[in-house]
Length: 417
Image (cartoon, rainbow, N blue to C red):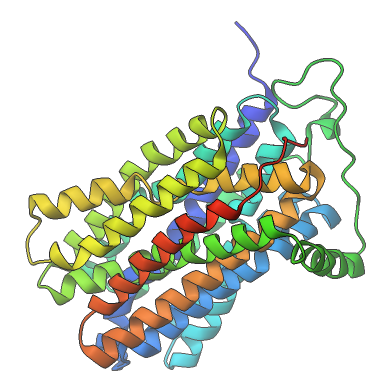
């Protein structure tokens, strides 16, 4: 029986960790209405906490990538999971809106941001030569799987036993993952005397420099400064801003509340959001497969353009019942949910090289989450001002179409690393 390459065990633990991080972060969408009902907060107040969570989640990512060059990967991931556990469980005693901002916005934001897709990109690039795009796609799909497994459960816990029970459960689950992380994760194949999966005998792993604490911040900021002078980074960061706005910002944060506005029960809406996750697993893994074979620029044109059209369709399908038109949107949009990640990571690697991919993609991902925070706040403001989300759906759809068009300016470059 052939021995399983250690890379696949590392990938399995990474996948589970990414599932959990996505589930912890996305559960905020389930909490909005219970929190507003108990404390009398309006949608703008709860949306501000969700926006801060998304903003911190994104901005911490490039620094987390650099921290993984200062400390061991498993140490950074373990601390991140403990931050999530504390931030979520401590909301049990919450009494004021600023508590929500600190605990869910900062603690959970920092924790989940440190184990976001940047973590997945680092593992894929260090541990795989063959199947790198496919593995990146699988890691990207983990965020959808997190929704699929946990969102309906969290929604039912919140409805049956209260939001506090749901929050404490999330904290407990975060702690349960720590032992697997401590046991399996290693910084690189070289650390255990191995080579990446698919590497031949002539392969030499690039050296991973150990940064001092001062260098963590300075090198991360310097990478951003240098990248800002290059057109590929501007395009990738700008389009990922739109990606965050049109996924985490408006759909993940507001879809359940928007559906409830049209008379749909919260647990049914959470189930639909989870169903988006089912189809995203298919779409994102397929995107990884396609990224190994086709020009990433053309894939991203298709993904953003189709997503924009689907968002323009949303106001016409929301209602109290699950109709065929709603299911069509769920399938169509779900296949495209985070399919943008594998080709975006590939373009970062092509234009900036393997050694810099983690931090460069960290900044691109930060732009994604800044867009998510902006989209969440904008949609919440539109809902509070107009009484519905119609303008928010229109804005998100048009931004996606503009993002698709921007790839006409993206140069082609031969793969590096």
